Length: 604
Image (cartoon, rainbow, N blue to C red; front, top):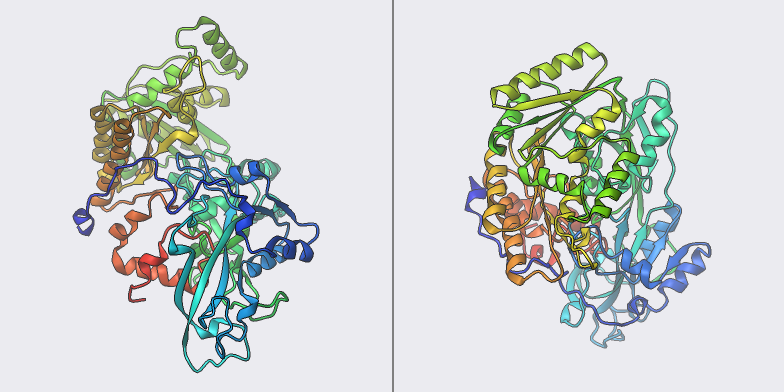
């Protein structure tokens, strides 16, 4: 296979500093064009704009180990018209250069038009994991000014001589802004008999399902975190329920978005030629074969093609009968093989999660976070009792967690029995199940608590130097089911051999798995390099068997180096052509998914 010939990737530094980022103490919004914020305020006096340090810092990172790289301003639009004006002002020709084509009276005196570009990063809930929200800018190199050949048709100057198809343009990167979508909170009515709902991009998953509860319908994509719907679309999220209900790609019927302007102008007033497009992709129908699949184009685009404002989501009936189950295995490979057989036999599981021994050990550890301190242990037990969960330490063995849901108790119990029989064929034991919600929660507690339990494995008593989500590398890869057992077992073995802390688990029903690798600030360079090598090894294994470097977290800037290995030069060229067609000035979340400099010489 092509992927098996891919080069090994460098893992010399796990910190992955944002490319060309700076950490000086300048006034952030000083990098923006001098009239940018004042012009925006004059157009929209009620528009909320923040240059507060804490707002900037919180919008410059997600929940991952990638360092914070804050924007210059955070803007909170309330409607699409405000977004249109924001994007239009983010790409303007310098006023002194209006007559560039006919004389040399340009800003630099060299006859080259200057265009100022402000980078734009859409923001949802800040839960992404691959550096999607980092503002990647140049601090002191020549990259601030790029002289490039641009089609003359991209200028809105009617007096220009456009006999030449291209002209040289000096592109000045003038800071960046974060577009916080938290005001887009609309939730439409669900008509009787319909299986869809229209929601604003800022609505979170939990608030949506709370609003839908009276309808008997539910949005089933569950990534764990309480993400915004717009963010879930942008990152192509999925989660534990994807094995039955699919990922965001299968659950987005339509969406509205604002696409950045392709025509640049020096005019403050808007015109039809320099107006950013407000587009509607898709329909309310449950299927369509009309033209290109445009909703899918923006799903997984990570804010690099436009700003999603509204999403039409597929809904599913809340199942009337749900049964949860767990089963222990003597080794991880057998547990993973059991999962593959359950899927091959067509047993309809709603969720199918696999935890290795280290994951179970993390759960047991989380029940007594006092590390020997009886007072803390008592407090931990008290919290568990308040949750009405009778949590007990588990046998430290690989565990399989299953969930079955359906319209009748009989059908659900038949599915459960079929899965239990398969588990026994692979030497599973202690198969337990429950149908009441409280016991189901207790049965699945090890899985539900895994993320923070894994991070707590590297806590430190007596100070605040323990691991946090901001110091934890969460890996993400997905492989064909036939290869799942071998790849996840090899990853768990890597963790042991390298001597790092890293519980491995997976959404086993669709071949997606993760390793949670918490780090401390004072960890040695050698330890961090080992963590990075675990990540690199698992991604290489995944790609070598035809899998992907990311099943649900997205690319960001953390994984873009793997895309050419996965798709080849031609695939990268096609993605680059799409990016250039919709965002020729590279305004939208630059440096994520693709490096435009790297694709500039490709055939498309």
